[in-house]
Length: 198
Image 1 (cartoon, rainbow, N blue to C red):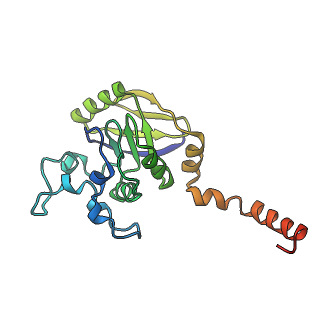
Image 2 (cartoon, rainbow, N blue to C red):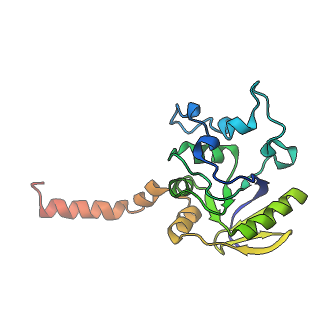
Image 3 (cartoon, one colour):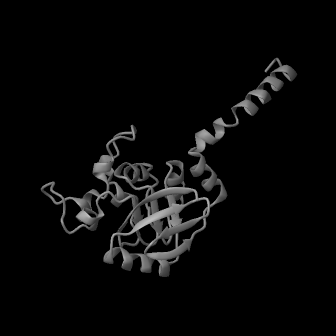
């Protein structure tokens, strides 16, 4: 079994979570990709005095260290900021389960080595119930496209072939292009021989 990830699931039972909720605009001042974990879900995680909000579900002790996020429909909608997957990744999330994702956010996740899995609402409902009752550890078998746990029967999921290949190989878009460097160099050398004036 090729396990892409093993981790604790945390439930965020919200539809239409946009990128401004994932990471508010005041934290978009850096492109270094560092330090965004503290800003994740900032308006929900913190009170006005800066202390953690005890009523926000991800602040509950039983979900600390979670790396699989369970949420609802249209996750990552709104602006196209890549800081959103950066913040999720730096917080510790490697896999996101939702009914659907905004297209740009979905692609940004894949490019940052995060797996975004779309599941039917009925399946999500069952997982939310289980996550409330017990600590839910999940194995994400990307090669077999299967979610596994002692708490439920195997759940199959779909994933685009190109994303699957990139995640299993650990490559982003640039990394995939770099695998073609030899072909690119060969083309450029041949072009130079045939058209030395260019």
